[in-house]
Amino acid sequence: AAGFSEARFLELNLTALTAGTSHKSEAEDRLKNVFIYTEQFECPVLIIEDIHILFDKNRGYHGLADMLKLMLMSGEVMMIATTVTENFRKTLEPEVNFVRYFEQVQLNEPKTAVAQKMIEANLPALLKHYECSLQQNLPGTALRLAQRFLKEKKLPDAAIDLLDRTLSSVT
Image 1 (tube, rainbow, N blue to C red):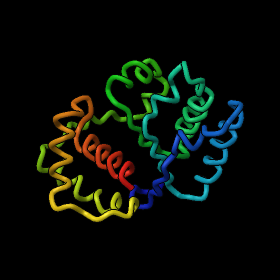
Image 2: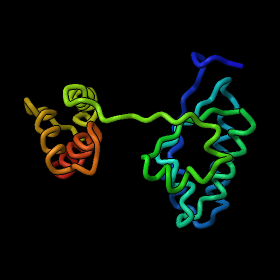
Image 3: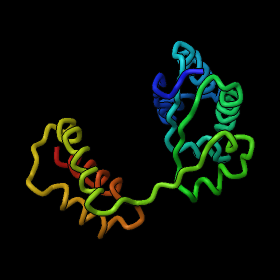
């Protein structure tokens, strides 16, 4: 088996996977193509954000979830999946045969100084995307406003989302 240093990390974007599909089989065909693509790598690792979406009974993606289960069981691919605790409890925890292939890691919100450094690290990409220049204390201001007005979200995501929405509205 290949070591982690040989791993090839690939994002599985669930929105892109399911966008424009009129039948479940279309999304399943796309996922099959992803699996075929991963075969070229010695140690493929799929990164899936908001994995709970696949297990939400109201969205109808259970066929995709079953395909992911089979892929995990085969050992041909590793996965790193994210979700928030509430969604894990509601949609993933009951999926015992799926969850057993994962190690649960709880990430806590970073301290303010660390969150500011994380925002500063993401800021150049945002500014480049929106073709904007930087005001002197934009990260600090975004951090303070996010803490004050976006209490339901955690840092640094809340501040980065705030910056993203603000920059998109002024450009």
